[in-house]
Length: 83
Image (cartoon, rainbow, N blue to C red; front, top):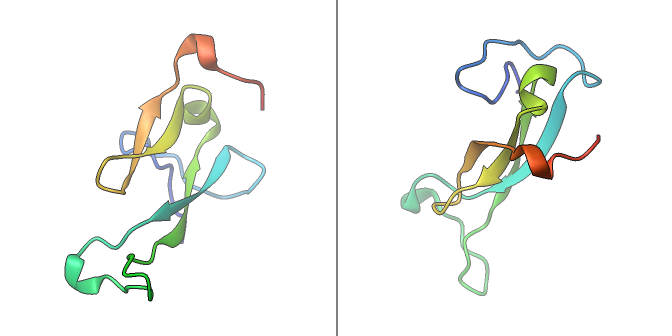
């Protein structure tokens, strides 16, 4: 369940869908022992929802890191798009 902004340094609480930006990200399992394999031998990924508050969403986005997790990244000023 969403409770706060995905930016670890922000304390904004999630209250409404129309505020901020909601992300649906595919994430892998955190522990190899928990991995569920498909018939092809690939691990199953699950969808998780993350939220950035209005203030953070104007300056940041979420991306996958090399280990399959989700990290908050600053948006380059020249690459920002209108939402």
